Amino acid sequence: MDENDALKISRLVALKVKEAILSVPAEKRGQFFARGKSGVTKLIDKVAEDAALEVLMKEKLRVLSEECGFVGEGDIFVALDPLDGTFNAVRGIPFYSVSLCFSDSEKLKDAFFGYVFNLANGDEYYANENAFKNGQRIISSSEEDFGKMNAIIYYPTKVLPFKRIRIYGSAALETCLVADGSFNCFVDLRGMLRIFDVAAGIYIAERAGAVALDENGNGLGNKKFDLSERLNVVLANSRICRRLLELVL
Image: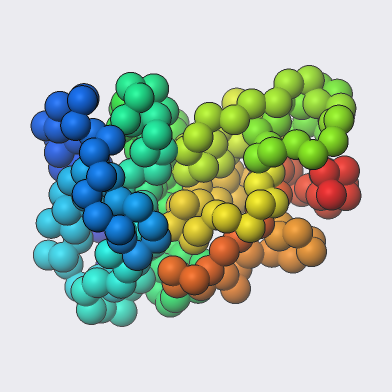
């Protein structure tokens, strides 16, 4: 499998997940379904995952998904978040996504394709060697002045010098907003992010020129596609990423 195959599969997954979500009446989206591998599973989460796996299980893939854990067999690993931003989807807030990261091993450093699709407005992000939004190549911001920067931070514990700070509730899409330069950085040091939350978005952002570090200033390449994996992420351009980490700690 190469990146062209991965793009075709990802687009079909996005189409099926969007159709499945639209089939669920708004008043039923937030209903409790079960307790999944990663916690409470709402009806809309289950519907989205079933639609995604219907496509992915036709391929020789080892898929790590938020609700069911590992399924399938194959040499290619996929970190799948069938619905990132469940709260937004339930409340009708147009910022929720499906994301897929394809890798030649269980480690993020061996990823070769990332895909994130905004299920509410149709924005499509993906990356192979380069990063794209809706078919157009994107480059992350090169801004170095904190006072001019727009930041996404979960959650500030002290006063920070940024122009503005926002939180939108879908880490996959928020990291893509750093990839396309809409925001200058993304920070989440709560130790709560799972690999499928941000693997695709980080891959896309790094192909757009950004750098992702953990709380110790190390890259994230050795993070594994595993349910137990938790990430701290500081994402920004290479010239400020370490200064940013020092600033927020």
